Length: 485
Image (cartoon, rainbow, N blue to C red):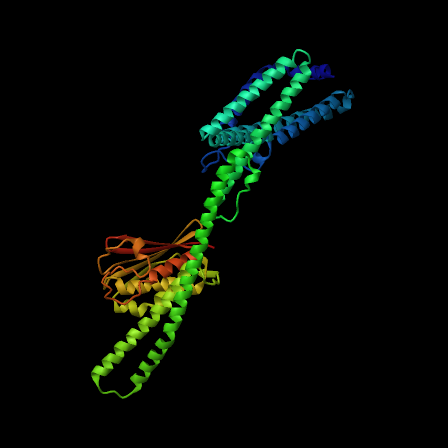
């Protein structure tokens, strides 16, 4: 049938002589251009791959082979047709089959080139994934063996033991081959394999013991000291080491328990003392209010009453701060986490401090994002955090200066920056300033318990945020960071 096709196309023979080399050159040029340009998209850097390029290459290869096989069947089927009236149908079928096979091959070559250029061929093929898995498994196994050997040979005793074991293994293998080999090579090979399997089993046991010790050390590093290593499950070389680790773990656990007990007792003591102070203090405040209602003409007595009122209210605030600081540092607070518009909370708190800021001549300059920014926090305690910072600013900021409040977002984080110029020289580090009962003015000439910033830090961290103070000369800056929702 092929001869009949050639006879019918013989009249175009001269045209084919010119078209064939020209078309071949064009195919080579177009193919080279496609290879160079494939994967590049205007406006994007690197190679642009799509979901099709992530399909395992072997699957696409099999599909193209099936299409090619079907194409050859179609060509062969039409080629066996000898009826003149089906000549055009035959020719159309053959051309279509070749076109489909060619298109499938081009698609396969295109995605193959893209994967090579993007360096993802190994990751997007079954063979590559299996190869990478084998390589990674082998690498980890070798590393584990190497770490186990290093740990095992850390002492001279273990190193000597390892050398002796290797020597015994080699000697037993030589004896087995020398004695049994001449009489029964097959039995000698089986014996050597059994000896090797036993040796490998002993190596695996020691590697597992090493992994158990390593896992427990990692758990201790992460704060879990309650679990203990079962010494009996390890090989003898690790018994002493496991015993030492268990002793250290017990020491950590005892220290943590003592710390928790001490913190609990301290919290209870502060709470009880504050409660005992609060009862007579409330009576003092009430009697002061009653005295103010009396018609007292003595100006000196009135002055004493005013001082008594101010000091009693300050003592009340101090006891409340003590209880709150104790609860915040110990985490003994129930949080009601909710979705909060942080810019709205800042504006609300700023409004409440407007009068205090005006008294100090402070101008608030805010820079808030145009879109609403939300965080997950407890509105009461979040308000207290900002309130304490603003209270600190109203007391210690330079008169007639500015307070800058910025809210910025980056990625999934939101940062709240509050800064001002201090009235006095800041001769203290940020770490000291966040400690309890410590203030920037060491002379303590202004009111304040020295607990505000410490409380704010503890409350912020309880709500899974970050609290940081920066001091640069007279510049005082507080930065809060939360996850954005």
